[in-house]
Amino acid sequence: MLFFTNRIIGFQLPKLLKQSTVKRQTVNYEQAERIGILVTLTDHEKQHTIDDFIAHFTADHKEVQVLCYDRRRARNKIFGYLQFTSKDVSAFGRFKAEHLIDFVNSRFDYLIHLDTESNEVLDKILTLSQAKCRIGCDIDDHHSFYELMFRADSLYDLCELIMRYVRLVSTSTEAKTS
Image (cartoon, rainbow, N blue to C red; front, side, top):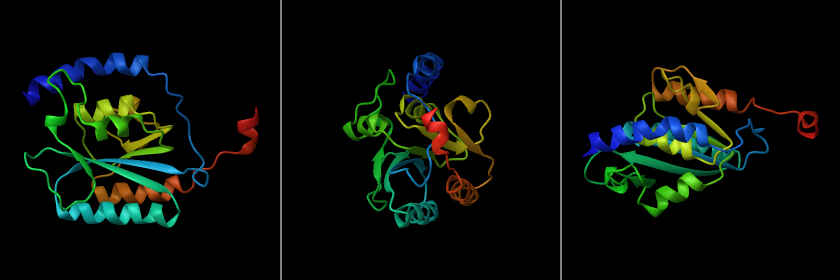
């Protein structure tokens, strides 16, 4: 069933990318208020890295919302983040869970995808997202899903690069007025 769903979503993605009307732009980090994090749930070590990553944003007074894709059959309540599984996606690729739909429709200043590889379900979330700036790992054939990409081999390296460079992002006020 999941294979069929992923194939359908794969066919939908090019059309969804072309139809997107969201104005993507780089947001000054100091002015950014809401940050979304999208990640595939795998193990507790990954959770500790994500927790540390989130702590940096909350220390900078940013509101952070995390959505985890859990590929396993049983949900893991230990992680404490919003989670969804393949059961929350219909056979035709529609999102069924309210919290998943709310996440996609949220207006984030930054949406950060913290996986070094992706899949069709996460790609659809990135495509439909209302985020101003989408950030992720430099994955082959995924350049249209992100405004800012980093080349990293591990989650820890990806988090370090994102934190370092996102804090450097600033847009001049002159550019906004013209």
